[in-house]
Image 1 (cartoon, helix red, strand yellow):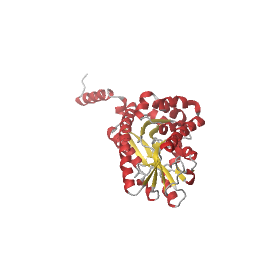
Image 2: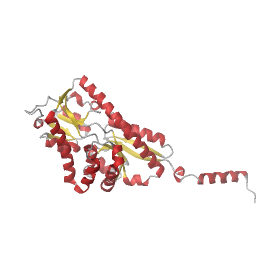
Image 3: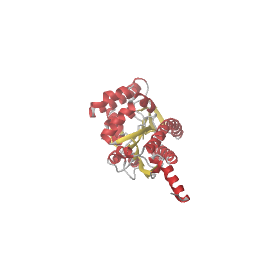
Image 4: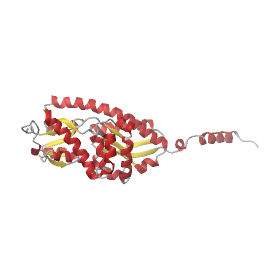
Length: 330
C-alpha cells in the first residue's frame, strides 16, 4: 500500500498535534473582570498591571477582559456578583465580601506580609473559607502594607489626655472599619469610594477614612485638610475569582494566573509603600496638616483597632477565628 506525499504530511502533522498537551489544542480562553475603583485610581492602575502581564504571558491560553469599575458593578455588590457567577474575577477590598465571609477581615487585621501567610498556612486556611462561604478563590493579597487614615475637613478637637474628640466627627467609612470608628465615638456613614466626593462637597460628612495612596486621585483633598496619624489596619485589596470558574480552567491557565498573581503581590506591596510615602509628601506640600497621636493616646488608638477587628470576627462567626488568629495574629 502506497501513501501519497500529502497523506504522509497530513499524518505526520496529526501525530505531532496529538502529542501536544490538551491545553495546547484548546481555544484561547477569556475571563471577565472588574475593579472596585474608577480607572484613574491607583488601585485600578495596579490591577491593570496584573492584567497586562497575564495577557502578555497567556497568549493562546488565557486572557483577562476588563469590563470596567464601579459603573459596571457597584462596590457593595461585588461579592454577591462574583459568588453568583455574574463576573469571573474582581479586584476588591475584603469589605464587599464581609457579609459572606466575615473572616476576610484578617487581611486588614494582620501585620504579616502575604508571603509570610503563605509560608505558615494562613493563606490556604482563609482560601478554604472563601471557597466554602463565598464561592471564591483568592489569588493574591495585593497593594498591602500601608494603613488607613482619618482625614478631616477641620482641625479635630483634642481631649485633655492628648487624644481626639471623635464624637465631633461624622466619618465616611468602608464596611471594614465601621465598627472601629464607631467604637471611637464617631458618627459613621458607610459609602463606596464613588460617593465620597459628593458627601464631602455637600457637608454630609466632615471626615473620610481611606489610604493615602490614591486619595488625591479622587479629589478628596480639596475638602479634607487634616490627617490623623497613626494609620490603622492595613490595605486589604484582593484579586479573586469565582471558584467554579477557577475550577473549570485548564491547569496551564491556572498556572499563569497564579504565577503572575504571586509576582504582582510582592511588587504591588513594595510599590504601595513607595507611592504612599510619595503621595503623603505631596499632600503635605499642598497644605495638608498632620495631627499626631502620641504616647498613651496613640497606644490606645492602635490597641482598640486590633481588638475591635478580632472581636467582630469572633462575634459574627467564631468557628475559625482561633485558628486564623494563630496564623494571622501577632
